[in-house]
Image (cartoon, rainbow, N blue to C red):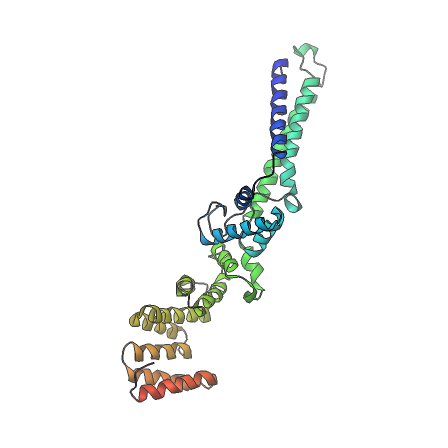
Length: 333
């Protein structure tokens, strides 16, 4: 390598170091800059590779609001990130933290740069002879050593980075992590994130039903509907899960949109799976009575429900009242 080229390489390395050091000693960012910076480091749980800072999804906006609140409260970046990762399963760092299992990923580039500097310094101190006649035996092999070191350094970077990215690609752990937990302690947002990231996982239908039941009981049919529909169409759902989903879809069709025919069809699908489902029988009777004006068919279904010896006392009282009303020819309440 010529003297001029060695000088240019040295100047280039020094310039890079100056830029890096200048960045490190820059003034502290504003609160807005911190919020954007933290948001840019967190992957949106329900998006395709977007950070929460760049995603328009409601969940990402909620997460950014939380970041802004914590920044205003004086929390550190690490504390805010830890809270986000703990609260929203499926949220991961778009850049890995410095420490723990990711430490090799941070050290690998430093190792590669250090190896490059060593090569430059070595070449400057051991200039290549002008002719091969002046090169001592074995000198060529020794001059190849720095190049081999540099090559090994870059290979290490590629291997470590590839291993880390492969580990990060596993998103199915969210279902496994929650499988043994009481889902009552898991937020809707976390369950949504896990379901989104593991839509084809065989265990996700149970989580879908649990989440949809929350929405249903809160009267949020719009949020419950896609989860019940996914369970009803899933090849992995159990009979109980499918029956629950079909019954809920049927009632939402009637209660939400007054679609009696659609509701009856869904109740019949549930009864094809479980002919003794008292819930499906009772709700079908309700729709026949209130939606179709078929009091006789409704009375027959209410009677079948009352034949179940395991029917809870409170439910039995309700069905008895409806049977008396429909038999007396009264309009449904």
